[in-house]
Length: 418
Image (cartoon, rainbow, N blue to C red; front, side):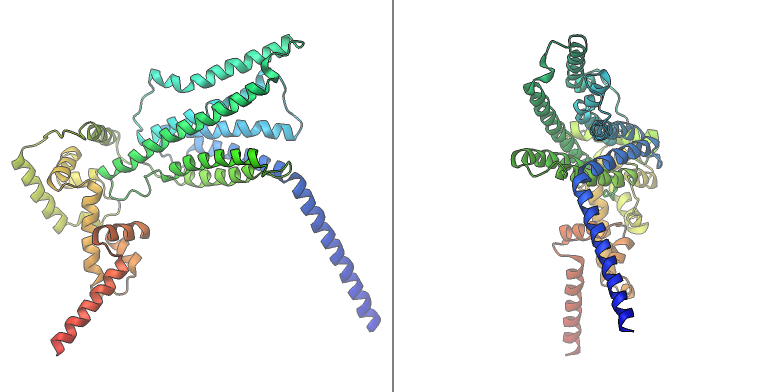
């Protein structure tokens, strides 16, 4: 029996050694080839994402997603160049190889134009839009000229091998990314203010995910510069590739779960865009759209509608919907809210929602609802937005308000008993 256990123990020990050896070899393999493995994953992921965005399974933001698809396609072509080097299929000094470098010079303007179409789906192509691609076209001409000189005049060293030229392109590429990143961030920031003119819940259409992409690009550039200066990455492992890999999956998640920014008919959509444009031009001087008497009449009708019908309980309430219930145009309704109540549509609706929430929080019949449930009941579709809006209007959180009201009720009861 002792011999049996001894042999069994030895066999288990041998298997443990084999397993340990296998694990060590696997770790060594990944340490040597991890960087290549991640680059291949990035290339495959961007290719798949390109097809998905162009396919647009949710059929939303069609024009914007075409441009965004070209943005992801550009990333794919850039990463494909690295992948070809890994498998020893690098195409040297040919027109095809420069085509793979060309997307680097149009990546930023393509992203910027996709953002422009997200915030204005009616945007038309303008002649000056060609200027966005001037740097890319000039760069492509230079690259093709270099290739032609190397191919047809192999003894002539030309500037293809100049480190200065390579450095210049990298610096210009970084400057272009930062410049277009700032432009994109600015118009996204304006968009987040403009959607408050027509939507009562903005978290699904505020395009924060595009804003995060801009911040991510700037962060990657800074990290890339630090990587060059401090030598953080090694031949077998690159932090930039890891960040890019997770960045691609972040883009994939948000781009495939995006909502239609302007979920209206073409006529309604055009009216909303006009309203936004007029709001920009009327920031200093407001036009008087209706008489003061008509304004007062509409204010009274609106107040009655809000108190009786309570349309604000609809989490998808928009300026278009409310205008149809009031039998007026979205433009006139927006003017009535802005001029008559000195609020935008988003502020006006959410003020009513908070007032309703305050009633429900002290209603004993609603004790089976938690705070999130109360928020959903009054028309919010996000716990964070409910808490933030409540605190902004009342200066306390919903939970603090509920505790405060309970304390007041208890004190009132004690005084009445005494």
